[in-house]
Image: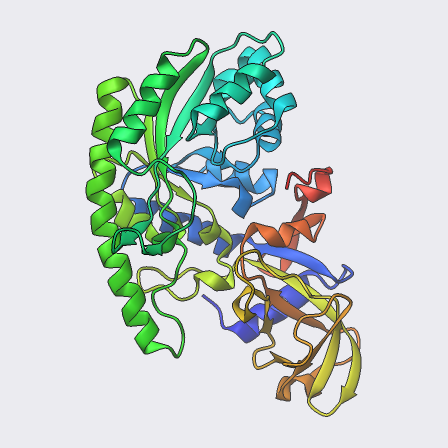
Length: 400
């Protein structure tokens, strides 16, 4: 690994012929992160989360590596597009109401064989049936388990509000309903423990919060491991030939892989290593995806202004959802303005060494959302751009 100052010099040299704003992916860091995810998965295949990558060329790159198998997608339209592009194992991680997409899926044997859809309610099956428009292909179905930790009879909850299916018997009942309905096949079970995989347990400068998060995650992981094992057993009694059980995320790879009931791990954000994934005790990734904004003003001593940069991430609003000025180190936002739609003032001693036209390199708070702002990613090897590849946006695809 090189120093931040050396990385900044490399990125500046590599992109000197390009106009900013621009986005890069450092391939050495990307590949190192991929290798670490596979190592932590302990021999279980890793399904790459497309929403955290949003670039077909980089999806192809990571899936060519040993240890990765299949894509976890985020919309039905994206799933069909990926399947048409040659990806033959696409798990849609969220239920859909895309009637036109379901009509296409039900009428095309290749698509139906490649795409698995998410279901947690019989009403979703009814919607699919109404959307078939004469299509008779069998729809592959995955059932989602609610992974949240609930205490005090549900008065206290940790985890995203996703599936209504919490108890093993509920999952098994839906499995029976699916197989009793012509045109559907249960092939998998999924559970995403975002309160473990997506919450850092070492927040900087907050030792008490760190202790509380670690206690919550230990409790949640133990409860979920037991409940998930029971749920999988219950579903296998209904569907003995269940193909996969998916779980985890970048922040919980090794913990989830240790569960015998889980057959594959989902991960994606760790490939780019955005800022929200800096604060984990279980792994340390390398920042791989960055974007650069040009300096356009010098309003005073210790201040520069860059063009744009107001790219907040999804989730509960807060300062942790903003990109972070990364290189040169030591820059910070003006609290009254933060990251702006058209301009962003940055404060700090390094500002006095920046000239008009120089670049400030940022890291996004989340992974793939950066790609919604840029049409291409410039792939950096050493101090050269060796290729420029389109993001989903660059291919004219904005799925969500």
